[in-house]
Image 1 (tube, rainbow, N blue to C red):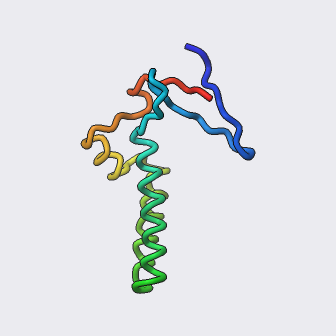
Image 2: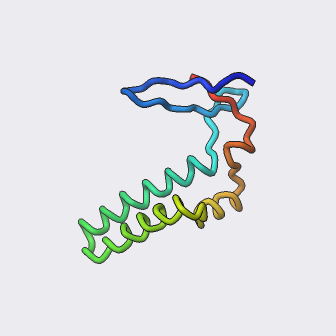
Length: 97
């Protein structure tokens, strides 16, 4: 197996995981980051347009991300696994540019 290839995009390196047909695979890891981003944006919008109390939703999302960095426990990842998503190491996908 060859080393992963990376694409340089505006100073950042992006690892693209694709299957044999060239389709980028949605993994648990990607889904968790996507979900966290959507929840932060939603909570900020709710805080701005509905009620300032929704700021606690943003705090909850941030606290969850913080605790995950130390414990490795992520409730969202467990839900995504039950929905059928696989971890990157389980996909057998290759990194390409």
